[in-house]
Amino acid sequence: MTTIETNPTALPPVEANRKRRQPRRKTAATVAWIIGIVLLTAVVLYPLLWMISASFKPSAEFGANNSFLPQNPTFDNFFKVMEGVAGIPTWKFFWNSTILGIGAVIGTVISSSMAAYAFARLDFKGRPLFFTMMIGTLLLPFHVLIIPQYMIFRNLGMIDTFFPLLVGKFLATEAFFVFLMVQFIRNLPKELDEAARIDGCGHWRIFWSITIPLIKPALITSSIFAFIWSWNDFLGPLLYLNSPDNYPLPLALRVFNDQTSGSDYGATVAIAVLALLPVMLFFVIFQRFLVDGVATQGLKG
Amino acid sequence: MTTGSAHAPTHTRTTAEPGTRPAGNRRTGGQPRRKGNRENVAGYLFLSPWLLGLFALTLGPMLYSLYLAFTDYNLFTAPEWTGLGNFERMAGDTVFWGSVQITMIYVLVGTPIKLAAALGVAMLLNYKTKGTAFFRSAFYAPSLIGASVSIAIVWRAMFSADGPVDSGLSLFGINLGGWVGVPALIMPMMILLAVWQFGAPMVIFLAGLKQIPTELYEAASVDGAKAWRKFLSVTLPMLSPVIFFNLLLEMIGAFQIFASAYIIGSGTGGPAGATNFYTVYLYTRAFTNNQMGYASAMAWVLLIAVGILAFILFRTSKSWVHYGGDTK
Image (cartoon, rainbow over all chains, first blue to last red; front, side):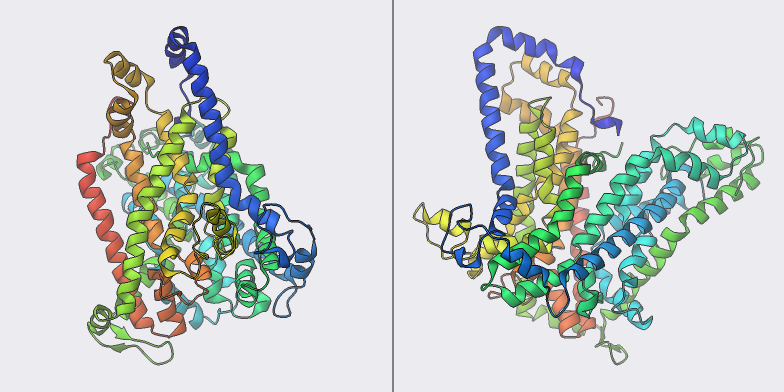
């Protein structure tokens, strides 16, 4: 975490030097920089802005009105989309996605923090081996596992339930989270643990009363990622959920897209916007945690 | 699970680096055996959910899928051993080779472009020390949602006939009639979707750039180095561990592209197999055609391909990745 700080003290001499020699060139460079970065932002955000604008266009305007803004903005697309697909109202898909997302957050936070505590603080036999394996699973293509996993859950009679989608979250199968928390715990001062130990605390007490409160930022980052990844997951639900009643949003979107594709862009884009709304909201609120979480990922001491 | 306090100090200090610590050190404390056992018990208790996941959901399934790769299995009758049959069929399967080809193009062309964009923008952001937080977040946003079904739908709409991209290009006299229905234009469209998600590697590059000591640039300036020279001789070598990390993770991620290709091709791999990426074909074989044996063989070929790629990267990294010892 401490590794991404800038080094403000080292810069001034050079800048001052440069300023004295070529003040005009410096200003010009700054202006060019601003123009460049604003243009780039416009390009990067264009698909998102287009998508929002398009969701207010009546379907007849697609292909006819090529301007960015709708000529006759309307909420019809959203009303239409809320009716749902396959006889299931759209709020049900939101509900299913929400349940899966909350389950994923709870499972991930509990199981990953426990595993991370073991890797970062406990000295047990086989730790180096298991740690290497944990890192190895970061690189493992998920597709090697889907067929046997499908067979396991099929034999357990768990097809078309949320169980197969959630059980892995409670077993810390996503190494990214374990690794993120290991990094965080290693940076905590060990003296606190030792003090607690002298006071007679066991590992469970230390974990619960010292480690967990101190790694809150990592827990928040993990929770948001866990929620968003679960919210966006398509392959998992595609494998395990058959009845439309159980569909989370990505599957509903797919049905909607296949049914209306080419004929009703307005409605299709509107439901895509609705499905992304919670993710964008989370992002706007917690962007700091997310971006910093990603930044630490690449810097393993 | 409580650990005695009397002999704690000698042990707890040494646990900074799991994986590097020699096991022999464990015997140096006052009562090594008991302390060691307690740490073992606590360690495995805390690790138990992860261990269960490792064996039941990762290692076990891996081994089972290796077995299935040598069988004919349709999910309803028992697997039937066929030896190398699946691999032989694969060798003669033109659809399989088509999917290999487009996946390789996507990985080997798309990933370098994405990383070049990520590095370029990271350097642009690193040019200023203040006021970049907003842009950093804005550029990161697509990485968070880019693989979702929503974005795949939007991408498809944007690149369809008379969509914004098509009509924008027609202003310059380029009339492609939409990209979605044209097999040759699917790949550029998919690569653009990947490049659009340059934000995640960019954030990692940016964190790496901030760690390069400014003295190195000053020294290079004193020696009369120009911007390009500084980039080649300071930035790239100092950043090479981060480049290596991003290259490895992004390539492995690119192999596994699924949702976007599946949605843009409506699950059929069309038009003309242009969205039939490796994982889409694997999924179709397994869950549409019920050829679990063949699909397992495909999964293992993917695993081996990814393994070889990672091996090559690690092997060549010795010559181009620079792990600075003291120059942190």
